[in-house]
View 1 (tube, helix red, strand yellow):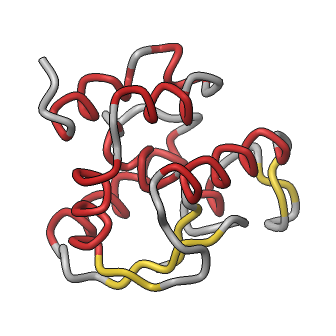
View 2: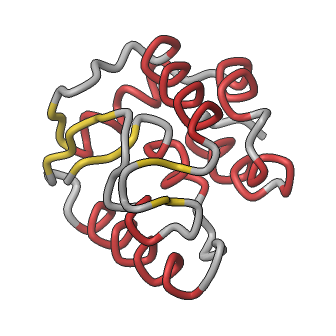
Amino acid sequence: MKLRAHHILCIQGYMGNGYDKNFTNNMDQIVKHLKSNPKSKVTIIDSIDCICSKCPNTINNTHCQTQDKVKTLDLNVINLLNIQKNKTYTYDDILDILSTNLSIDKFNRICSNCQWFEYGYCKDALSKLLKIT
């Protein structure tokens, strides 16, 4: 499975909401698969992935309408969390990286420009991951 770097955070905060039914059905399947198969192989990328494939903001399955924004999100995840682009991890490895490297400050720096962050969807799930009350 190929995932944009910032989508590893989106998966943690996902609560069943999305752009439309097609998007949420796809996201539901991806999240369920990863959580029930923690040894799944995940390659971190900074381009269109299996989540983007069903997003209404994806243009011709080649790029996002908000390309600059999502590229910045990906770059921030890669740099702030010490994740290597084009490297394959297990999903368990990714969870370990998040629990080791993610802080509330890094989370805010990475995600504060995202519409889902503004809605508050991610904060509760990521707070549990970070063991913050």
